[in-house]
Image (cartoon, rainbow, N blue to C red; front, side, top):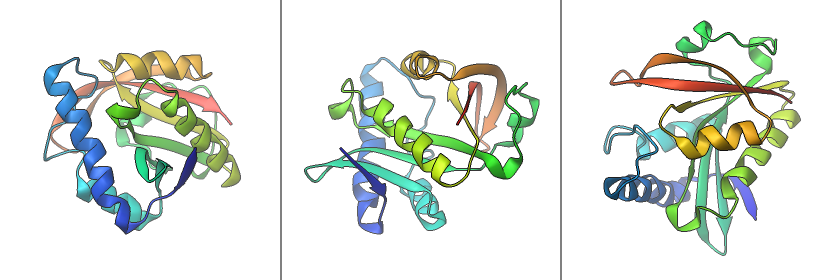
Length: 173
């Protein structure tokens, strides 16, 4: 297992992961509330790459996963009753953690979360926060199993075009 910072050369494979997830969801079941061509896209990945916060999981040349790990808390986070106190600059946030459908069911998401926790500790962060769509049953089962506390839910106006209820989780690092 190799998780590393993404490079510009990874963008096509990252986009292929997003597309494969959306392709699978067209047949059901649906675990994201994403919209093809709007989110996530190559531009989504490129922005995280330029910010230095995009990481990929790779094995034998195959990109099996991608995540954006930064400290950006969406405005809606302000209404969540977080219980683990932290200065804003000490909070890490997992965004758009994706596993290619061909690699799902192999513990890859757990590996990616463990990497995010380790990298965040290395960066001096003390708390991990994240949100996931209320309909994302695998994620809503996985995070509590990994020690994340459900902190609450709120309606988000995600990316300015998706209104959705997101469940928020937190964990001390």
